[in-house]
Image (cartoon, rainbow, N blue to C red; front, side):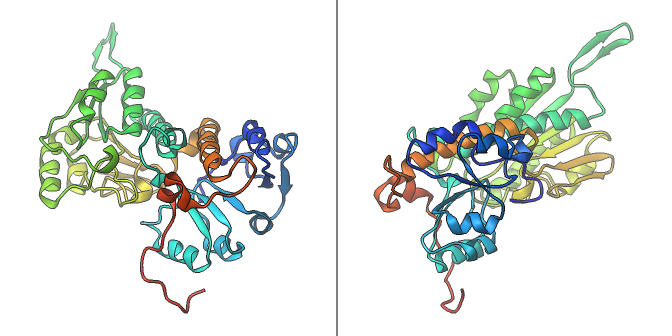
Length: 361
C-alpha cells in the first residue's frame, strides 16, 4: 500500500452491511490502526482478526484494498481470487499481466464509468475531494504569506494570490478551501465547461482558448501544439502567484507536465507549489513524490497520498464507495457475480496490458 498509506478499505461501522449479505469478513491485524480504527472495534462487530497478510490472502475469495496488490500478493492468492482496489493497470503493466497469468480477477475502481449508477462507488471523486482540501491546507501552512486580506493600523495586507490548475473534484475543493481562507483565487482547466463551477465558488477562471473534454467528461490529453500554447499562456499567471496547487490529470495516464523548471525559477521567492499529482509524475518538472524541495526560494511539495493525511474521513468515504461496489460484485446470497453479466463489473476488469510470455509464472 505504500509507506504513506494510513487509510483502511472498510471501516467498522460498515461491517454489518457486509455480514448481512452472508459475507464472512477477515482483516489483517493492525490494518485500521493508522485510521484510528483499532482491531478491538472490528472484533466487536464480529470480524475475524488475522495476524499474517499472506494468511488473509489465502483464506479470502475477495480482497479489498486501497491501492493495488503487490507481486507477492498475486503470487500468494488462489486461482480465481478477486482483488478490488485502485490498481491503475495502464500504469502497472507487469502487475496486470501477472494477474492474468495467475488466473485471478481484479477490479480497478478508477475505471468506473461516470454514470448515475456508479456515482456511489466513485472513489476518484471521494478521495480527490480530500486531496484537494489537504493541498490547500498544506500550501497555506508552508507559505510565508497569510491567505486573507488584513487591514491593520500598520496598513493593508493584500490577500495571497492562489492559482489552482485543474478544476476537477480535487481542484474545486482546493479552490473552495483557499477561498474560505480568504485568498484571491484563480483557476485554470483545459475543459471550458469547468468555468461555471469555478466562478460559482467565487474564483476567477483563466481563459486560454483550449477546450479538451474527453470520455465521460474527464480531460483528454492535449496535443503537442495545445501543450505549447498552454505553457505560453499560463506562464504569466504562474509567475505572479504566491501559491499554486496543481491537480491536473487524465485518469490512468501520466500527469501532464505544465510547470517547467524555468517557470519555477521566475517565481517570487517564498512562493509555494503543491502538486497532488506527484505519484503519477507531477504537473511540475521539479515535483518529487513525497519530497519537498526548494528551487531559487520556491518550495515545490510533491504530495503523496494526501488523502492519508485526513485518513479518518477518507477511510469512511472509501469504505462506502467499496460497499456500493461490493453490493454489485456479490449477490444478496453471497455469490460472486460473473463480471461479464454486469456492465459496471465489466468496465472495471483489469486486463493484460501487453503480450504475455507463456513462460512466466
